Image 1 (tube, helix red, strand yellow):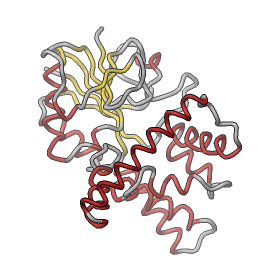
Image 2: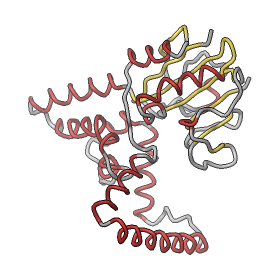
Image 3: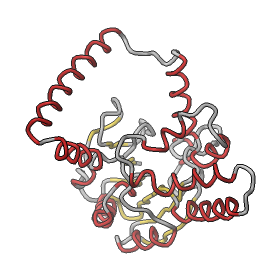
Length: 277
């Protein structure tokens, strides 16, 4: 079988063709999916993307999904995982009610619910307010955060705490030196741009660059809107899945949506699959 993983990030498998916008190593091919998919039609048996669609502009979602349809073989499967807007909204409403009733620690749930809803849409720097929240030690309602974000949050917190304790040092002196050189020229470049543009236009440029970097959520989906999108792109037999069940052969062995022990990597996800006619 030929299998394609789009926007793979750090979640990829060597048996798949893995695509990402940045360099992820020898098993990952660099490509911007907004520029189309560089494969002939009817190439793959399955196409998978996780937490990618919400990063695309709303108007780009249908053309992108149609591209996925084009490169699938007849009977091929598309699998989509993304943040579940309905689940996040229901959590927010519950947290709001508990906060209004004055339940203990409900203010932490409410604060986190607001971050889930808005932070990755409105932030103006990498990591945003969610990263600042995760930097706390201890993290208020830490187990709740892990229940919401799963393995991804645990990895971020582990890196932050290892770095703070000095155990996270892994760069060689040569790497440090090269980073210093890069930072020097980057600062020089920024200084020149500031002088040419003025401070206000320079800050606007930096904000625009960040918001076009791919980190921002540009739209959100629920079980209704995602199903409609897949059907509009031509897919049929649209079905909701879980992290561990799939119509893709041997799905569980690839450990893309769940770890080998069954732990779900991003439990805030909505999972849908559909097939090509």
